[in-house]
Amino acid sequence: MTNPDTTKSAKPARQPQNPMLKLALEMGPLVLFFFTNYKYGIFPATGVLMAAVVAALAVSYVMTKHLPIMPVVTAVFVLIFGGLTFLFNDDLFIKLKPTIVNCLFGTALLGALAFGKPLLPVLLDSVLQLTEAGWRKLTLRWGLFFFLLAILNEAVWRNFSTDTWVNFKVWGVMPLTVVFALSQVRLILKHELKPEDPEAKAEHW
Image (cartoon, rainbow, N blue to C red; front, side, top):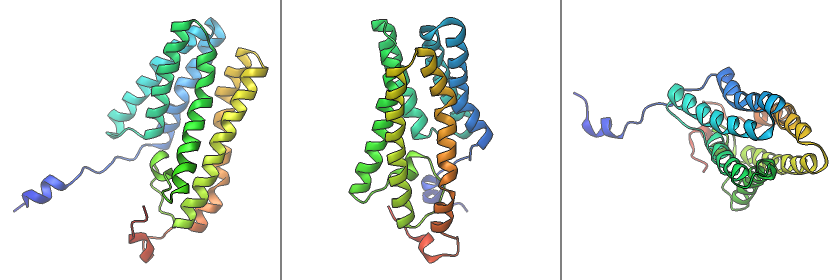
């Protein structure tokens, strides 16, 4: 006979997202943004981006019954700054969005790390199991990387045309992020907890 208490407390297992689907949901809105800007300009492209990020979140939820934090936060800021872009008829706002979002992520990671609470597993929706030292190192690196992206965004939109900024946002930031993530594999493998490792059973955070 099923224990009712156990039934009530049981949580449905999160369905892992296919890596290719995840990449498509992240890149899809940006690619649409790029092509719409190329053909119609930054304002129609901003509208398309706003609609696309909401659609991507909806697809992600339908497929996994889960909404990862980073895409949700990014979508909220796209809607806010996209709305400001239309309200004031000024593309400055959509250009500032990556700077603010990356600074927000960087500050959250490094700030929480200073208090001994690495947020990286939550922020990246990670299923990795690392030692405390591994999470600290990885969190520090990702925090600094987000600030680097913010600086690059500022440098590009302030010194180049809108089309160049769009190209960088779509075809520059994602490859940089992938290269950076791959460069952390050695650190992850070094500090990864194995299932048989007694530490793996401990709750570090």
